[in-house]
Structure formats: structure tokens, C-alpha cells
Length: 496
Image (cartoon, rainbow, N blue to C red; front, side, top):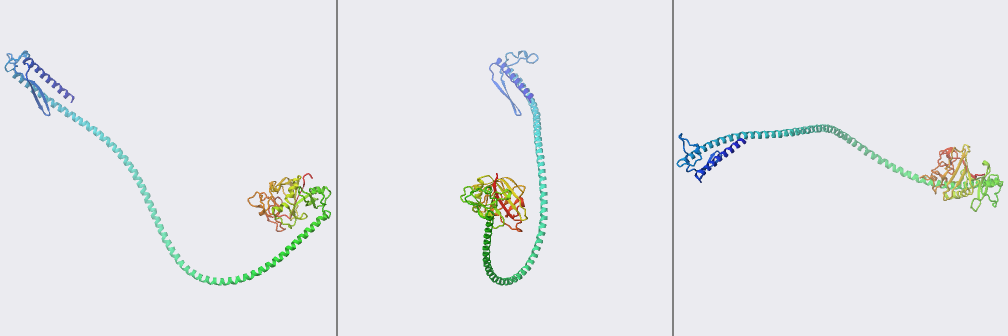
């Protein structure tokens, strides 16, 4: 293509140069002549040439009939020189036209070849592009096919599971249908039984109504009998109450008689008469040191208490000089008392009694005292417990118990708490238990958390003293449920 264009360009340049040269010669020879246009049409291409007209140009011929080439540049001759020149130009133009046709044919052939190559190249590029697009499409198709296979496998698995579930549901439905049929059969049987039972119930109801009528009649007769028996029981209760009243009077008279007898015995043992009240003794130890060595009832002056206090002095146990403040012997005195009664004291010094918490606070505040606890069970055993230091707190301190230095034969360790336990009664709960120990175990005592001892519990006689948690107990002697026969608590100065 490029070669054809270059050849065409060279040919056109040559023709143009020849035309310009001829025109120039004409001008030199003939002056200003007219120019003539010559157009050549070939196919789609047209070529235009500018040809000068030569009017007075004539070439001279040699003797051979040819134009003298040496005279080409000579001034034109007159006559037919222009016609020859025109013919020469036409011949040249025809030759040029032929060359142009050949060039056009050559160019067209080259153009066709290149067009074919271009088309082939374009087809090749398109084919490569189409192949690439096809490859991509095949890749995408393969990927989509793989995904479709996966989805198909999943669908198949899900379909299989659904089919299995449907089969299972079908089997379950069949079983349920069978069970339903069996239940329907059972219901029908039960309905038959129910109808028979209803008939029996109707029969039984009729019998029961008859029996109820008989029972009502019997009830009325029993009510009449109960009314008569109630009247008899009330009469008997009145008689029993009268007898009990008489018995209580006799018991009080007997108790008063026993107290009088014990008082007389105490008076006789103390020399038949109490000590003169003008003699002031702080405790039984001073009474003993004053020469009174017989156990009995004496008067002593305790702390700031104005009136002399009647106490029982034990002048025999372990050297004597003991001031007794608690004694249990026969159950004649009720120890289920209030806070105030335990504070002021109750009972008779010659028998069962409690000297009083206030008197013991005053007594143990004037000096340092020791405590001795004498015990006796129903089998004749008589151990004791002794404490080197003993003191009671004031009423504001809930008559707290302070002990130290245990010894004795009533257990290897103390059954009394020694860390300052308050005194409790049924109307004043000062123990360390959520319950009320004084109500559960009865009496007044230093219960702590219901504790290991209670010498002021219920008095149980022999044969009834076993498994009694609210009796007179000392845990480390006979255990928590054995009620003792007698107890004595007494104090004397530690330096006696």
C-alpha cells in the first residue's frame, strides 16, 4: 500500500514537472499563451493536467525527417509546429494515462491484498477475542455447573431426608391410628363398665340412704346418751374439783407442817433459837469463825441490804462455813418463777429455796468467793463440782455468771458456762439461743444456748426421771436427760 502511494506521488510529480517545463518553454518562445485543462477519468479516480497552448511552435526536421533535437530550445517556427507538439503531448498523455491505469490496477491489487490481510487479521483478532470470551464462558459455565451440582446434591439430600421423615411420620401415623383404635375399644369397654357401675352406684346410693336414715336415728340416740353422760361427767368434775380443793388444802397444810417441822429442826440444830440480830455476820464463814459450828439457819447482813437475811449455813461439808443459796430435795417448792421472784428469792432457808440473785450479787461483791455444787442421783451417788472464783453481776448486767478454776468429781469438765452468761427466766429471755430456753427447759438459770445444766428444772420422782430434758440435770454427771434427786449450791470466801 505504501509503495503504491509513493509510485503515484512520483508519477504525478514527474508529470507536473514536465507540464511546468513545457509551459515554461512555451513562454520563452511564444510569450504569454493560453493554458488548457486536460482531465482523465479512470474508475473512481480523476486526474486533471494543465496544458499550455502553443500557437507558433514548429520543429525543424533533419534530412532524416526527425525533429532536430538540437533545436528544441530554439524559437518556435511558424507553420504546423504547434500541432506536432500537441500531438506529442497527447501521446505523452496517453502514455501517462496508461501508466496511471497500470498504477491504479497495481494500487487496487495491493489494496485488495492488504484489505484481505487486514480482514484476516481482524478476523484473527475477533476469533481470539471470541475464543477468550468462549473460554471465559466455558469457565463460568463449568463453575455454574459445579454449583448446580452442589445445589442438586443438597436438594437430593434434603429430598431424601424429607422422604425419610415422611416415611417415619407415616409409620407414626399408622401406630397412632392403631393406638387410637385400641383406645376407642378401651373407651367402649370402659363405657360399658361405667354403665354397669352407675347401676351399682344407684343401688348403693339407695342402700346408703337407708343406712343414713338408720345412722341419723342412731346419732340422735347417741346424742341423747352424750347429753346424759355430759351431765354425769360435769357432776363428777364438780365432785372431783371439790375433792381436789380439799386435797390441795391438805397438801398445803402438809407442806406448812413440813416447813414448820424443818424450821424446828433447824432451830434445834442451831441451838433452839436464832442468833441475836444485833450480831452482824457477812456470811456463814464469819458465823463459823464466831464459834457456831452446827449446820442450820442463821441471820447474816449482806451488803447494803438493811434487813438481816435468813440463810442456811453448812458447817460440815469440806470444813464448813458454806452459805447455801440453792437447795432441791423433794420437789415441795415450785421453781417455775418470774424474774422478780428469782431476784428477791423464794422458799424456806431450812428446806428447798432460792436465796435470791440480788442477795448473791451483794454477797459476791463484798469479797472473793468460791462455789461448791453438791449433787445426788437416785442411785445414791453424790459427786460435787467446785470453782475457785465465783461472782454474779448486777441486775443491769442480767446477773451474769463469772466462774474460774474448776475441780471436782461431777465430770471431767464443767457443766456450767464460765464466760459471762446472763440469767434467764420465762419472762426475761437473756440466753444465746433463738428459742427461749427458760420456756423449753423450765425454771430460771444461766442457760447460754440452752446449756449443759439446769438445777432449777422440773422435779421428777424416781421412775419418772429418765428421758426428761426439762428436769434437774448436770450433763457431765448423768447426761442431758437424767433428772437428779437433790442439789445444793453454796459459797464461802476463797481465802477461808
